[in-house]
Image (tube, rainbow, N blue to C red; front, side, top):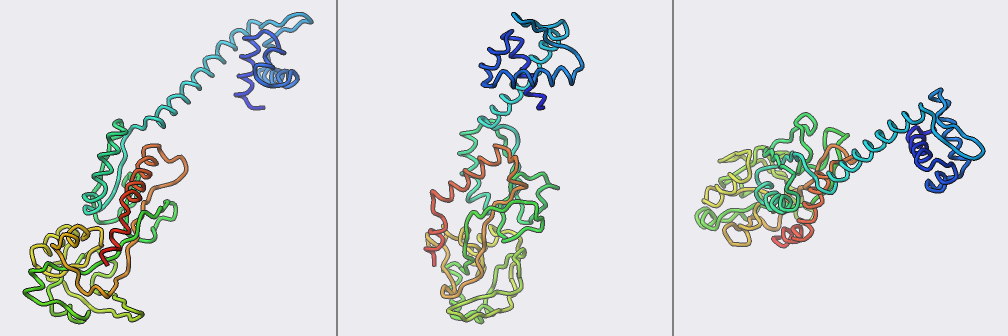
Length: 306
């Protein structure tokens, strides 16, 4: 029989000094209470309760064991209560991995609101454009723009989808002209992201037509914000996700190039070690980030750029 149930039954017998009252308070049958008591005594090899036709009382061994059993159950209730408090009021360190661009544009406002609601949670934000192993680097959550993970044990939750766009500043296009066809990019200064899946080629599609063109960067960098700033200063044409270029395109600081052609889209995923026993702080932050995207309808905003 279950040892915890035996302890609960025995302490209730000790409190009530009556099998019938103990059974009623536990919502059990008298025979069920009696079986648990007998099982406990047999396992311990000692009589805990003396019963006569008129009364029930604890043996000296029963008195001692009842006191220990009460302490065990009290400690268990205290442990359960402490976990419940952590769930209700999460605390501890939440380690998040994300790119610089995503951190600047989307994580900062979510972290600010999250910290206001859950002040006991400390955020450790690891900014990198490379994808590091979650477990080896102690990450609770990572935001990544790739469809699959090398480690099959991690959980992937889609956050959003974004197009990759080609853009340049009006000043650059006034000076160098606007490409009319993908092949025209060869005559322009390109600002290329070195960590792209295929940094030396662009795969463009339009109305069923697909072209693959080689590209060489006048400026190659592993960070989208550096390339964005270079484009704003008129250094060349860049290729970056819509979520990075959105504000600049809306404000006219950048202008789309080859708008009829589409590049492969990027899927923005939330990646975390496991759904099982996910810490409350991780689960709540994931929910906050998903809600942030839903409320702001970012996918529709990015799609409107096209």
